[in-house]
Amino acid sequence: MLAAYVAKPAPDDPLSALEVGDRPEPEPREGWMTVTVKAASLNHHDVFSLRGVGLPEDRMPMILGCDAAGTDENGNDVVVHAVISDPTWTGDETL
Image 1 (cartoon, one colour):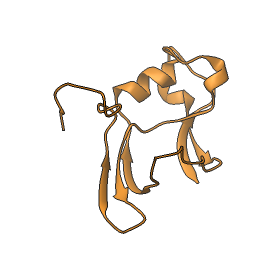
Image 2 (cartoon, one colour):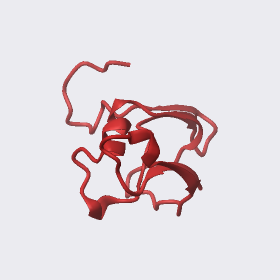
Image 3 (tube, one colour):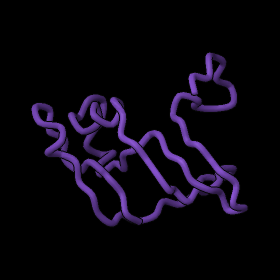
């Protein structure tokens, strides 16, 4: 799959760490669904990852893009937003 990712962080020049290319398609975890992504964005979390903030070497290369929009296997529109982490999360859904 085509992906934006970080393989080696660059704390002083994060955009130089941005790579775009083919990556292996990850296997969905049990209970998860797949989304055919039509659009994705990079946000501040991704910039921090490009700088290497909180990203250990064993987690690289890491695919970027916390926010995305696309369709599920049934053709339903889907928005992926990283703020809502799991069903037990209780807080403001800031969409």
